[in-house]
Image 1 (cartoon, rainbow, N blue to C red):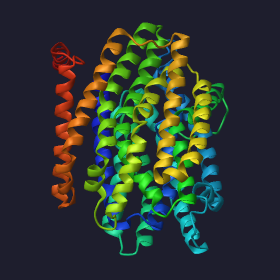
Image 2 (image 1 turned 120 degrees about the horizontal axis):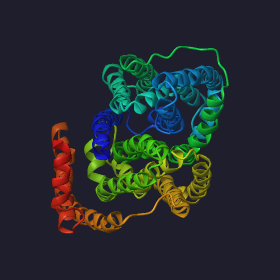
Image 3 (image 1 turned 90 degrees about the vertical axis):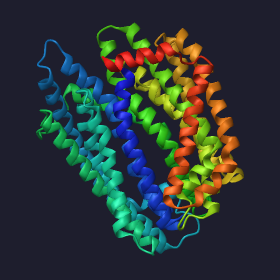
Image 4 (image 1 turned 30 degrees about the vertical axis):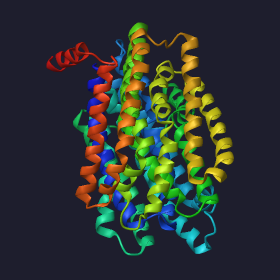
Length: 522
């Protein structure tokens, strides 16, 4: 498998989803602004969003894919038939658990919302009841997206990466439709319709994945729940992987709760909007790399190809740095024009834009770490080691909590994002050091030669964009088309400068381009 090609197929669809997400967020800021209504919806959306990241993009796939691949590739078995039987056994146990969990969350939505928001900051009982209502509307999404993760794991194992990568597009389309068709001058009405649309989108994603599985010869039947040895092993791997893969998401939940309870109304929205921009490169690069690397490394290790697995991880690290370093530099230095162009109209004021840019800069300091977690954790999961990542995730969560409490008062809305960035960096350092100590990862000469050159190229790009900000800002307040054109100029300028800098500094050569073209031609 060509790693870059596989990443490109996922990245293209993820790019479409993330661009639609920016359209959604732009409409959201226009109709709701930064207010209690927007904060209440975003708190209600945080729980299902966390489950999406943990299960659809993290724990379930990390535990399920290696076990499913082993069944499919077993030379003494019946290939796909054994894999489907294993998936049906897993579904039989997980579905009742998910149904009970969803019901309990609906019943206890009040304390759940309290835990996620700290009862906000100085709101009435009626306002808090509204926030609880929004949580109840979004909770069914947890059930749907967890089932989506099972079907998506099967399709990823069959190398149908694009189907699962396309599913989040339905979420964004549903929320955009709700904003356009059911918005009101009353923000609370618009927020309620957004919460309803979240669960509707989960059902649509489940229907899409079920259809795709059937089209690829996979039809799961409901069985009586039985804790077979394979299912026990799966459950044993899922929960540690949930914390290991979801450290960033759990840290964001902590940050959201502290911001809602200690900061002024609108602060949750600033942090959310900043995180959405920060998530764009994370979704394009990190999730795509993690999706491709896990089945590839697990298959290589299963075949005893240790050297090939090491090569795959080095190239994954190289791709991550190539794509992440310029994104980090741009988001840190140019957050103001980016936020202004996307969000700065309607109910979203210039002050809201400025505070969002500040939170974005704090988040983006940790962007390389967020993505490198996705590159490094497959090295553990492919070896069926979920305990080490969870131990390090718990340490990073503790670091995040301490830093949140220390920074949230002096830095306000910048405190939680910066705490999350630092905690993620601590997590990456521990993951990297342990893999290296065990002999499961070592930076090869090619990675060492290119890493510092890529960093210098990103800094050169950042210098050019920083100098151009004064010229760019006036065009971020025009018509919608003017804003999009301004962002296009900003992005294309950065890409051109970065590409030239990588060649001037020797990070990439003409031979690399020729090799890439030959692979495409082949």
